Amino acid sequence: MSRAVIDRLREARVIAVIRAPSADGAVLAVDALVRGGVTGIEITYSTPDVPRVLETLAERYGDRIVLGAGTLRRPEQADAAVAAGARFLVCPGLDDDLVGAMGATGAVTMAGALTPTEVMRADRLGADVVKIFPASLGGPSYLRGLRGPFPDVAFMPTGGVSADNVDEWIAGGAIAAGVGSELCSSADIAGERWHAIEAQARRFSAPTAT
Image 1 (tube, rainbow, N blue to C red):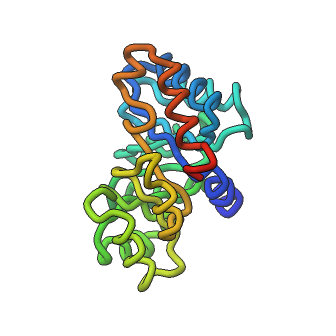
Image 2: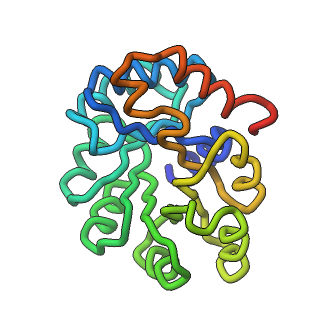
Image 3: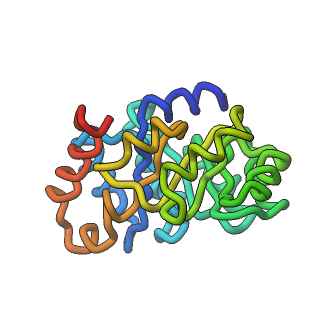
């Protein structure tokens, strides 16, 4: 399953990292994102009632989206997220027990790293994808630098990705780019500004940003 999901993420190119103030708000935000053409969806565990959100989205969209859970910090969250429909799991750093639990589910495992030493450790722990975070600290040129010693590692930058530079991240070697508030902010969700979220999604999915 890992290869098929990673291929789907490559096609999606953009993964919306959703930190919503409510479960219902998260679902409505995804509706807006999908209308705007964004199909990579990551519901973070900073959102209330993540399993319910995942179950709702999995039932509503099925294979029309690539659904995952992010900001995992406890091993038990991995099984709960996959049982609810997550196809990929993301943690912000490197915790042996957590990465092991994520990998044991069979879902695509993404572990956060920044330095070459951390990239090596993430790879050794079995991460399918290394989440470069916060990617804003180095920019696309930093990712290109990492590709030299790690040509076989799949990278996903998160933080510092915008509609104006997503092309550069992909050209630098990212399989996809994680985008948070630039695409779907918690303020827009709280304010029920669904048209604004849809408009941002169209910017990220437009030909000039893909």
